[in-house]
Amino acid sequence: MEPSETLDVVELWDGERDRLNNEWWLITLMTCLTMCIAFNVTVISVRYWCSLKRDKVEYEDFIHVTEEKWHLDDEMNALASQTKSLRLAQLDAAPKT
Image (spheres, one colour):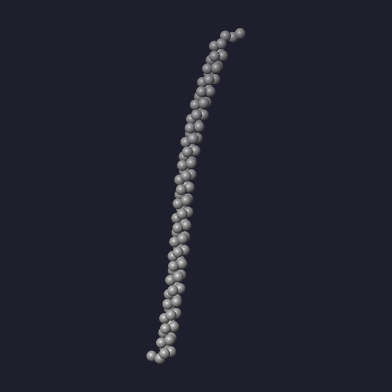
């Protein structure tokens, strides 16, 4: 083997090693980016799910309070009706002057 042939083989081998190093860094970079994106998607999903749960609890509380208010309104209307009926009965029973 002549020295020039040996030099060509060494240069080719060094070039191949550089190409593999470049691919390794590219693979590492793509892996890191993929992991960052997956982490952010997970965080966003968890925050969205938590906000849905919080909104559901707030909605259920609102419905419960609203139903209680309607129940109290019904009771107040019933008491007002009874009061009106009693007042009319008292007026009818009162001696007329």
